[in-house]
Image (cartoon, rainbow, N blue to C red; front, top):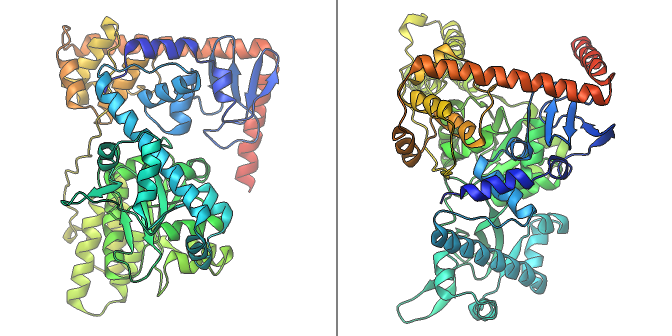
Amino acid sequence: MAISPETVEEVIRVANVYDVISQYINLEKTGSNYRALCPFHPEKTPSFMVSPQKNIFKCFGCGKSGNAVKFVMEYEGISFPEAIVKIAQQYNIPVKYTKEDENKDLLGLYNVVKKVASFYKEQLKKSEKAKKYLKEREINYSTVDFFEIGYSPENSNILLEYCKKEGISEEDLKKTGIISIYENGQIVDKFRGRVIFPIKDHRGRTVAFGGRSIEESKTPKYLNSPETPIYSKSKVLYGYYEARDILREKKEVIIVEGYFDLLSLYQIGIKNVVATLGTALTEKHAELLKKFVNRAYLMFDSDKAGKNAVIRASKVLLSKEIEVYYIPLEKKDPDELSKEGRKTVEMVINSSKDFLLYLLDRIKETTDLKKEKKLIDLYLEILSYVPDKYVQGVYLKKLSEEIGIPIQFLEVKERKNPVEKEEKNVLESKLFYPEKIILKTLIFEKDKLLSMFEDFDKIEGSEYFLYLVNLIINNQLSEGELEEIKSFEVPVDTKAALEALKNLHKKWIKTQIELSALFNKTDENILSLIIKNNKEDVIADDDA
């Protein structure tokens, strides 16, 4: 489903950088421009500048700069096409696609789930039994409201009558996994008699539901939506959308397994938490988290299934260079632990340990040779998912020193760990001739070109070009995009591509100088103050 070039061009032309950015952070006027504390790196003195006249932003602390689309991409942690759609909605710009019929069908399904979520939310207000259940689970009103928790009544006809009034077809209800149709023609709401947890994707769209039975005798206790055209459980984490701002701020995430685990932690003030949805943590989940965090704390159940989930999750997270800390819970789940208060939970989190070092302690504690061998093999297997060879070496040396086995007898096997690729929207946008040479050469001579040029994050170019460069470098190009680039009628020429990249880098440097001059002209003292104060911040941090 590719966004049309006309839509892309209109969004970039219309989107005002001040209007867009001011929705996310507070901007302070300085001359004809605006400034703020940068949302992309910690600082005490504002070095983030916005120029409505030039329609650009620039941070003189971390170097990030660009237009409104680039800001939304960076801040929201979303792709270029997703940022285009988000801004288009803000400006009421119709988003056109190259496959219009397919898009209309999907938009219709999103709308169906949104309306049903509203229905469930209203039904909770009418059900004393459901409200009593949530009260017994100690989930307060503000949490219910924030996560838009609802209730599905036992009588499925109530939902069906509502959908009929809203013009929602039975076919769409079936496509979204909300109803089941039996052979005798009976139609039932799959979630009837359950407390409902709306599941949102990373863009905040409700795409599915989770349900918890109120009656303990009813099985299964938890029921999740099946895979649908708008929902894939391998790509969605419960609570991720709601937690994005705090994840960005803390750079750390706590991963739990259940809805109530997350809700209980959230309402005692621990809000950088997400939950898996009845599935193992996947590479797509890790890619979502990597946009905002550097460290993950695994707070899973202490049973065998929970421990296996920890091992699986650690491999996936470490492969994405996310530090993994393990929080072993003895005879309690996160929901029960939360009932003891925030201080207790924070103490447990702070006492957690790097998962590999936790395993090392287990190895040192065991006196059973077979069990020791099994744990060493597990340690080495998990270590094989760490892409950084230096980091591997540090952990390997630590293992050797602690167990007394020479390092040459400890082998970390090479692992080809392909990243699951998520299809991206292909934009039918015009590319300049040098950009086409760079892209095609990157496809065929990637390693060679990467060894010759390192500043791919410091080049100017069309939005579509920069979007494709990023996909190629991170091995995320779809088959369609790959074939499109291969079909370009330009040569594969490393020398020409390198020269073009150097020119785009010079163009980027020129832009940075112009930006500095632009903001300096507005307030001749501001840049010197930024530099002076940032130095003072560094000194103060060092003293601390």
